[in-house]
Length: 176
Image (cartoon, rainbow, N blue to C red; front, side, top):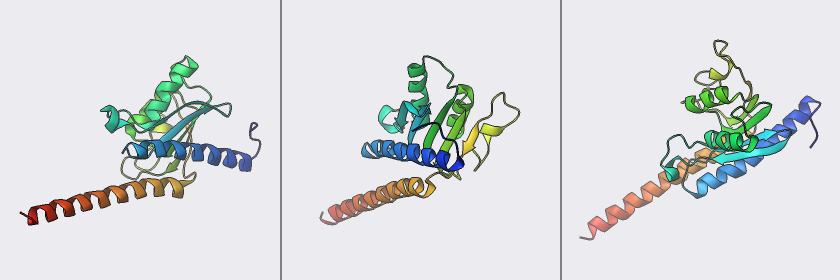
């Protein structure tokens, strides 16, 4: 892809990278994590990527964004992500929004809104708070339905698993 010149080209590029982030979310699902994926892009090339790993790493900060930014710093050999765009399937939480401000991300593109913990506009908007020394261009709702469905489907599957385990436990105790 070349540098986009029109709004339509930007939209297509955003959808392309969000699909990439959705594929990363599948990695989280496979290991039993909430399926959120993130990819850091500069000059239309992957700098780094991440997916949720809080449970498997026993690290509450191991969100997709956090992992992508940490790896991005190593890849760029800089703690600033200047001229980078982060694509993430779910609106960042307060921790990740703070990270984006500190890392000087130029642009955030996210899929599904998070009305409980979203700090890119849903609950609060930390990324555009003029009291801070850096603001971030934000584009939300890119492939929002697909991103939200992936998370909803994951939690539906989890509820069904718990229900099945309760049924097994109940039937096992009735045999005694």
